[in-house]
Length: 165
Image (cartoon, rainbow, N blue to C red; front, side, top):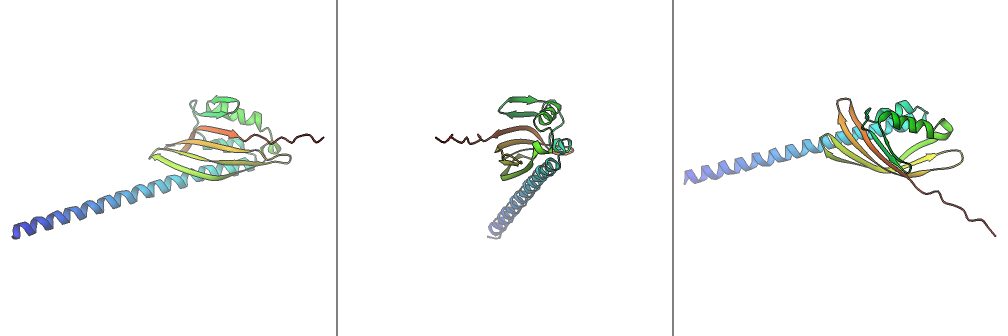
């Protein structure tokens, strides 16, 4: 009888340890996800602040500085960090063209400890227009932190006004 009781106690103790291990591991993973999400959101906040002060070089610090970095938009695919920067310089030559950038409806999804993606909306507030659209950003974690490795941004169609008769 004592042998059975000892076995049951040992089994219960082992089960309790297993539950504690699982809870601790899950909690740690959730904390890592939360930290990764906070770090990615911080990259996007840094980019928005850099954009709004007209600093494209600082804005580009959020991207992986590699020939493998990609930007996908309505005009096609741009490959390479420098080519993406050059594209931004061509399309946003000054503060007036850049306007004020904001993000909304931002969702960050952690895929694994060193990969994530973010989806959301962007809006530019400029003197004569307010272009807006959606984006998907693929992030990877490098020794220097989370960086965008692929950016797919699509602008919404600009509403056209019909000529009145």
